[in-house]
Image 1 (cartoon, rainbow, N blue to C red):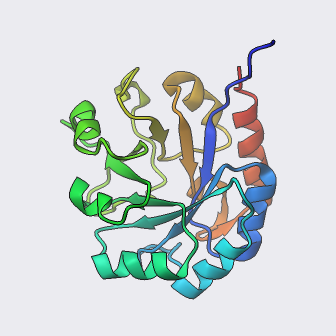
Image 2: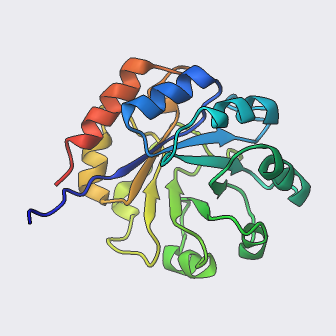
Image 3: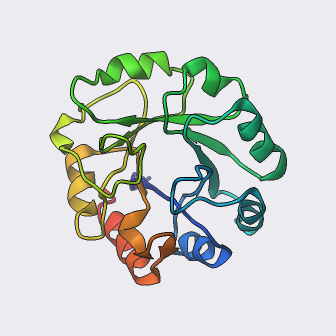
Length: 212
């Protein structure tokens, strides 16, 4: 039997409407991301998120992104929106992330002095560690790229690469970092919060071309 080609998984984040979610799904994205953080230009209300999530078919992971939320807010989202995965982008403790009994990933901003293996051990119940660019005062979605040479060749948790990913650089990013998955938002937008069908398709084609 011939070996199965491995390809990097893709999450398209910051979806704000049903049409863009359908674009992501039809392009072959493995996951979509809904941002529950009001300062973000990609923030969605619970009602809008519910509409988006209801149209997502089986085997596409629906992810809810939070930044230092209250327990009550996370629970209200879980109660009303069909969510498969939680993504925490703030200073949430492992205990905080685990209390909801839902699979989660923890985002790490790649500032100086970060000890990734220690973080992976702290969040050992997570489904993966997301690596994003560091910009003071901005918890994510900076659109900036960090030095990929800083990513370890192996980590005890799956690596999800984010930060400044574009159709033009995703092929190189995957070849260099070899992440389990990549997470893109601004790199496939026509404007903040609005996706571009052409950019999504170009991005997915470049990811597919790296399958071995």
